[in-house]
Length: 114
Image 1 (tube, rainbow, N blue to C red):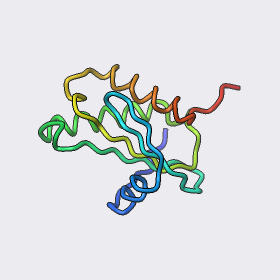
Image 2: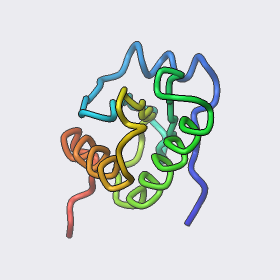
Image 3: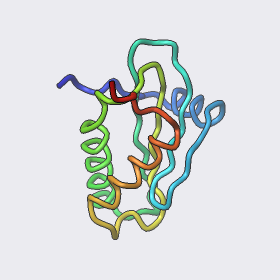
Image 4: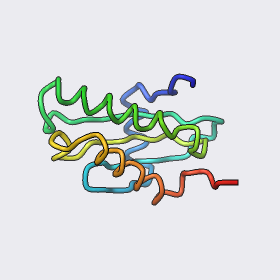
């Protein structure tokens, strides 16, 4: 499995937030915009409202691992930012996973099974 291509700069995040579409679930918001590349670039955002640095980093690691699990089954050519919502710090891994999968299905980013 390859490493994730990441969004790193503030202006890259701002472009996705301002020009992209968004999909909302109870614990996660996904912002998405086309990037005209052969791969997806991913960013993860967890606000200080979620908790202290230990909690925020735990949530970020969990979100990365969830995305990594189904990255190969996702359509290419997008910049995607996953943002954690309030309350995510008190739920377990499987609830976050279901939330992210629901959003990806709603955005029709999963490749069709052939």
